[in-house]
Amino acid sequence: MTSLNFEEFISDFSRFYILTLLYEGPCHGYSIISKFKRRIGKEISPSLVYPFLQQLEQKGLVKHAIKHVGEKEKKVYELTEEGKKLCGRLFKRFAALVSVAIEPSLEICASCGCKVYEGGHKEMIDGRETVFCCKHCANAYKQERRSFT
Ligand SMILES: [Zn+2]
Image 1 (tube, rainbow, N blue to C red):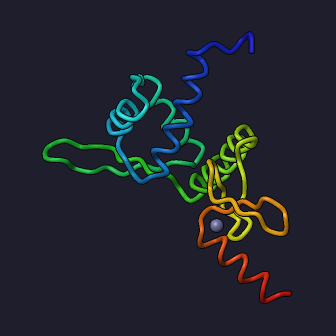
Image 2 (image 1 turned 90 degrees about the vertical axis):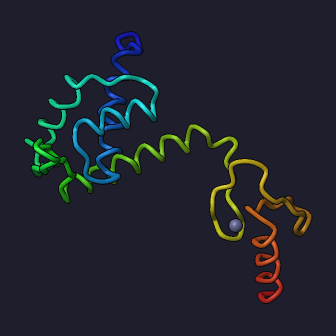
């Protein structure tokens, strides 16, 4: 942690977030910059965005098309199939890291298997407190058990 300061972290996070914006759909450089500012609440420098897009393009992860907007030409960037696959893997890894970090408060619905982050619906079943995401799942679970016993 000693060599990682906040600015460095933000710069890596910025690259990560640029990928998530591209994953949402094709966009031009300027819209990456404005969406980033709107959602993260922090300015992102064009001197980070454009070289990164270029780098991604060189690696075959991004391609661009020229769109004419009035008299201007704009480059619209888009992830390639390979780029989308890479993002899919990155996001899964990131999601797994995040759910591990919040695991103590994380419970799984005994019926549908979805994640229950807070509260949910609890019922005593066979003397055991069982967690469900909702009442309907609890009923379905009890019904299932009845049909098996
Ligand atoms: Zn459920």
